[in-house]
Length: 428
Image (cartoon, rainbow, N blue to C red; front, side, top):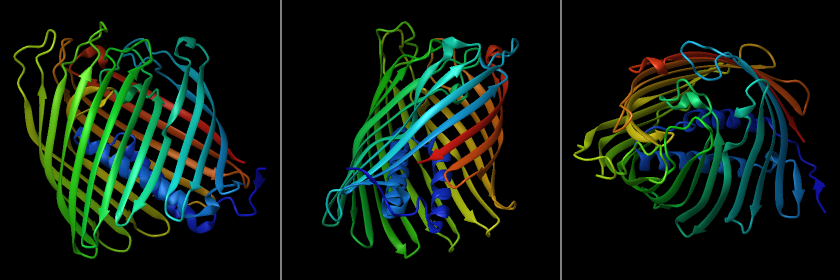
């Protein structure tokens, strides 16, 4: 018999932690770095989110024996003034997105637990019905945490179906770029007090669902490892490395990318600079080596440095910000390999009573690698404003605006798009 738990839905001391998780999710959405390192960072963020949720039973709103559940539903309205990301013939559309979300925490023993999260919805387009699409929110999946002495083993399966075509720098001219991403793997962490070692493996699949895809389905095998030492209580330094094997479906007519191997090696430093400031820096060297498959012959390796830094600062009760930036070579853009620079700033303002205000800004400049259809150089920047507030104890609303502009070496891929969104969420 499922009964409603006699606990508050979300205690006050959890709210700052939830804000931190949202900020992490903003950067994890397009986690940058080398492919294997990117898997590792994304896995760390997902594990941190699950650990935070599991640490406070008040995060959940239903109990069934030892299993805790959290349910919510939502309804979103988007107006997109350039639904196809076209440089000349701009067409607008209204999109309605109903959705359901659930999270589960099952403590199997005092330390071991099984966690699940699923957020699903459907996008209805008022005039472009061919773009109607079922979607799965990033962060959905299963996670099984096992503790053996000083060793923590995390088994996971993360899945998402996304429609953010502007995340693909070659999407101009067609906004129907739905993508299924599934990652299954294991991450093992040994905490030896002064020394922390991590070893992991992920198998990832990217499957095209939209009719405008120009990239074949692909899969990758990714191994990553790191060893860090606490040189000071607040400072950890170490070495990291990874290997990735990328493979593309040759049965599809859109096979414009060669299979490839990528490896990277570098160092990192993570520091709690003060009570309210934390940061991380990764620096290293990476090699992206395409193989001679199909029409691809005599391709040279791409070898260069990478770096990524991030900084989070809670300035005071009224203002906080997060910074992220760096240089990377990976295949995170819908399975296509790119070499690029990026920078992101996420600011949070608590200056209006009962309202939460954030203002994200981002920029990216890159070059596509190894394409039979011709390489693409691009510049993209975006700005946004998000305003949210609690309408009732269980109902909340959010109003958002985004401007994304891209200029490309291929004129047909230039575009500007404005997106206005109104979203409601109800917590059962």
